[in-house]
Amino acid sequence: MESYTYLLLLAIILLSTKVFGLLTERVHLPQVVGALLAGIIMGPSGFGVLESTDFLVKAAEIGVIMLMFTAGIDTDMNELKETGVQASVIAVLGVFTPLMRNHSALGTREQECYQFEDLEDFRHVLGVRYRLLPYLYSEYMKAALGGDMLFKPLAFVYPGDKMAAQTEDQMMFGDEIMLAPVYTQNASGRYVYLPEEMLFVKFLPGGAIRQETLAPGHHYVEIALNEVPMFIRRGRCVPLAEPAETVGAVDASRLTTLGYEGASYVLYEDDGVHKNYTALEDCRTLQHPAR
Image (tube, rainbow, N blue to C red):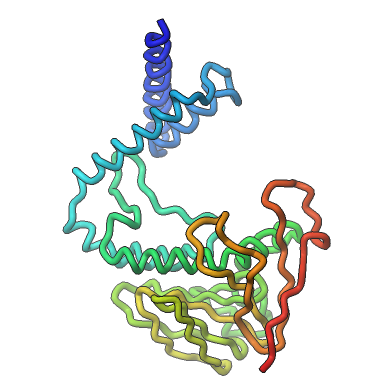
């Protein structure tokens, strides 16, 4: 009798996800959105028809394995070679976004990082994100608590600079970093405008970090496809963690700083669990050493 219960659960899941998938497809949304809605509605948050059990967890794991296997069967290697460059560019910019995900929905092109060539380059880019995670989280929370913007156009930070007001392909991230992504295919670099002196930083494959102080004005900077560039504002520094492969492995007790000598950074951090957000209690100051 228990085996029939499993079959009933599977039938409910398949029927609900299919129905909601078709409904979301009619409003030009991916079917995966419908599957998520089905889980919410049929689960404890909705009607409570289904709840998470060991059986559902194991079935989901089998489903993921089968999905990856069929993705491999349907992979077009020529198409992957053609789109690998664009995927790399997106990954580099994604380092600085709060949510970094690159996946595909059912019935669409497989575009996960592991589908392309040069896996070590993708691994390097993801590794830089984990090294910058303390800064990314800190700036995100400070923006949320202070009612500020996480990303800003240059004109918001340099309101008296007419050139900054006309610069639309660069942006400020938090209070310390300026971003200037290379978005032109096959380009070996790009021109950037610096409203003030900045420290040009490139995270290189292998873990090395190259730094160069640039004066205010226009510059052409060379940036390879597997390098992660950013600009640190004069008199500022950012926290940097040791390389890690998961969020849980990021060691906040062993942070270093990257930036100008003698600069300091106010780091927001919490235990990742509680919701009693207090800007003062959860902050500490990091000092970048002077020579």
